Length: 280
Image 1 (cartoon, rainbow, N blue to C red):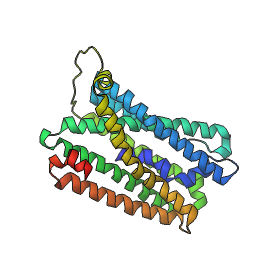
Image 2 (tube, one colour):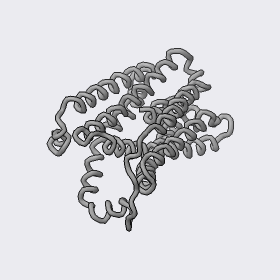
Image 3 (cartoon, rainbow, N blue to C red):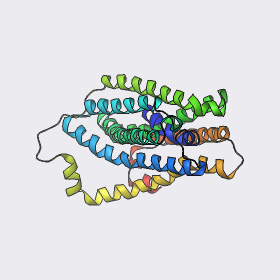
């Protein structure tokens, strides 16, 4: 939940940050900003592969702690990133670099977190633990939109551009630091064994069909992500809704997603998490 706050913040603040890291044309600024966001998403699978590799080689706990530290440093640096008004195009480059680091860390977070949940739990309920983990990503979105809504309600639009967005990132840095400390209390769930090849090689060599199917299934969730992320901004452009209105709508939709996810994780028998549940 806490890492979802850090990664999702830049998306929800798009109308604000596109004015902080801007070009001369407002529409072009938003387009450039979304290209930066997109590059951040491209770094997610890279992070998942790299962090996953180290998790299999050196153990889950220490890798997970190191991964959180990466997110913490990137978020702190975002708080102090100068605007384009201060240092010009260099500000956009710094923001892009930090966004890539966040994406890298978040990629490792999701895969590492699900793996820990599966290995940490009672085997009978391991998939339910994974489902709850996924559900709490919605809680991170609720936290993001709630904090932004409070800021938008409390300060003026110009103040949001001047310093309000930095407060949101600073809050995220505090949350990530708390998460960083909590992870030292985790119990290691995996002890590396001597093996000829790391598991990632075995995955690509011996599980090609399953890997391909998993990739295709994951593309289904892209439609949900695109709708949840970009629809609020489109609504701002084509309707008379304000940024405050859209923030509230985002909270309501995230709450609905969280409740439905938790209901599935809590009440459905484990067998429904297999093929039949995916088809449904």
